Image (cartoon, rainbow, N blue to C red; front, side, top):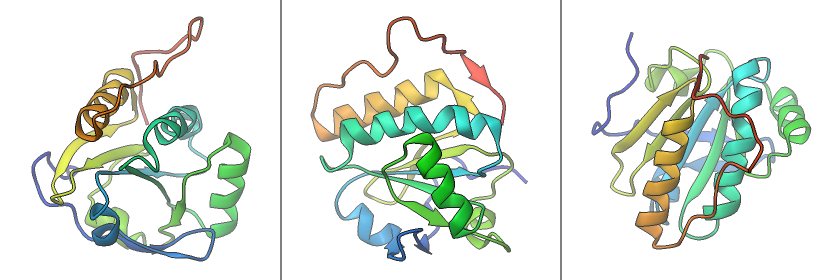
Length: 164
């Protein structure tokens, strides 16, 4: 089963966050693009990737972009993951039977989807791909009309790719 293709409509997301709030993709898209970052707390590549997603959230969250982590775990594990890795954006729970993950045809975690306000998938990235993270940053900066700060810090050793 292949992940959804760029240009296809994003399936609905209606999930509860670890904070107990209900989240809706349709509602979020009214305010701008959405990054939906699917993960499992036990996934080493997810653990590596999410601090960079947090950096995107700090640059663009509240400025017209929404960032969500979609956990294939229970609320407790999702909350622990967020605390351990310094994640401040909402963590939504897609526990078994993983209905939302199945709708998005996930094969790997992490898988990132950048969803345009019109509801189409603009970019998808499986595993950690430095190029894809930078492309998400570029597209958000262009769409929101802000200048992006450097995402990777001097001296950080960032691989081009880490499989999920």
